[in-house]
Length: 54
Image (tube, rainbow, N blue to C red; front, side):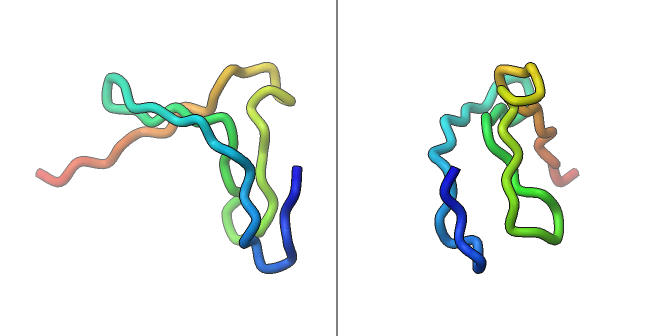
């Protein structure tokens, strides 16, 4: 997976929204320029909740 030191090159991310969550294959590690691939961890996609303003 191509990444640069500054994190400009990101992997192709096929993401979609369903049931209040964003599902995406790649996600960035917090405070880093590394990316995690859900397939390497046995998942189809990462499930990230969408925050809603009330």
